[in-house]
Image (cartoon, rainbow, N blue to C red; front, side, top):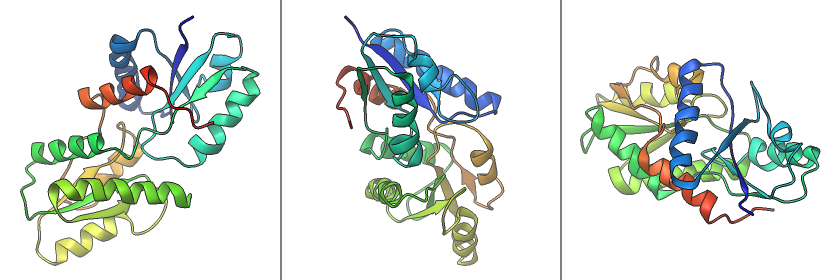
Length: 223
């Protein structure tokens, strides 16, 4: 019996953000077969609702760029509430060298050149393990583009705006590499941080889609 495939995202009220998640799920489905989508916040269905009436083994892939509360606590709790007895939850999507490669390409798209300052903008997290993963993601990007400063747009310090302001005062061109999956309130905030340019979110990039497809076809569970 083929397992049921479920992509879990955070959730957003932004229509463009929701369209992006839908586009990602559809693109992944082209590689692996039917994929259902669930959300852990803002809108539904949530993973409990998706799994509640199913007895088919399931693979759940969190489309999150780092682990944290939603991946480590919220998602397992909703799955437990469903009563489903056979669910594999894979690790979060990031950090991964593939995501760093996508960010580098996005930087080139907006005019970044070697020597320009780069601020990798993440939503942030209060979870120490997630923050370590975000630091690792910034290091992976730095391996490709040189100096990278990690800033947060929602939770944690230093903020993206503070880092951009400091670098701009030194007279350098500053580019923000968006380490966000989809458009939404966080990505909109980046446009007001004063950088020379802001990259697009990672979105439905073919390499990100392939990474998600691999999670489904070769799942390694975290519980």
